[in-house]
Amino acid sequence: MAIPSWALFALLSALFAAMTAIYAKLGLKNVNSDLATAIRTVVILFITWGIVFFRGSSRELPALSRNNWIYLILSAVATGLSWLFYYRALQLGNVSQVSAIDKGSIVFTILLSFFFLKEPLTLRLLIGVALILAGMLVIIKR
Image 1 (cartoon, helix red, strand yellow):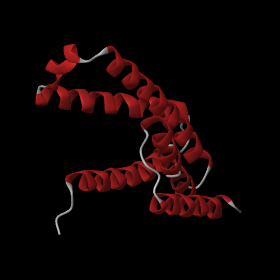
Image 2 (tube, one colour; image 1 turned 60 degrees about the vertical axis):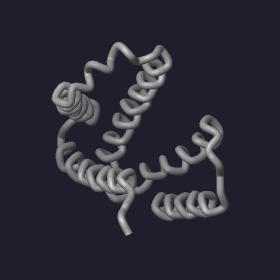
Image 3 (cartoon, one colour; image 1 turned 135 degrees about the horizontal axis):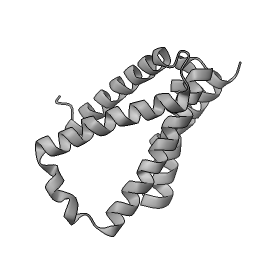
Image 4 (cartoon, one colour; image 1 turned 120 degrees about the horizontal axis):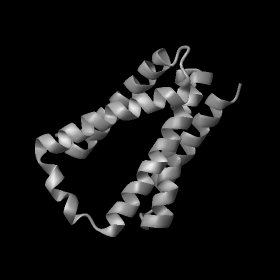
């Protein structure tokens, strides 16, 4: 059975997110979390724009609609805030706990996709959400 390409990319994303948490925790020692986030952001900026120019995707910029810009900017603001809070949490807490709770974003994503994107909420999805919430509560509880 071949794995769908979207699932492969999602698994790679999860792997690199795990590496991000470990490297960030190690790098945050005696460093302000906001400064660390800013450094991370600059590195990502160079990598992603390098990829865009290498692949020639920059030619698509003029074709972006007003809505594309609005939602991409809102996504960037949300990402920035997420990173700032995540790095601060990593600085203060255990990486295993912070990372597990951060993955609770899955619950918010599923609920928001139902309300805003009209994606269906199936019984299987709701059971998964309940299990994720239960796991988060187990991790949060001391």
